[in-house]
Image (spheres, rainbow, N blue to C red):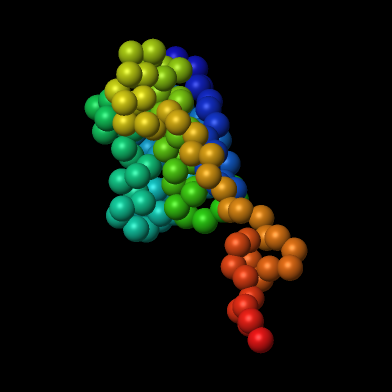
Length: 128
């Protein structure tokens, strides 16, 4: 198996995934998963697709992620890993799709409107 690549996006984050056979290393921007995402719940979010298809120690991942915050980056990585697994084996598509790991979450921050302090917030209304 050669290198399989995939892209995952969420909010302002873009994750590029490079997957190959190996010993189970997961490197994000040159750091290990535990160093890059120190929070346990965020680490679990990244590893969810691998636990769903019961894979992991036989694949190496090299991930470049850019933009957004840690939560958006983690969900972008999750989508990218899911897409790479489907490229590896088409049988993984059903369990990943059932858990909605192959769906791009299109929600982004709403733009600020003129005449308002934020997107929807208004200044205090005075009747008199």
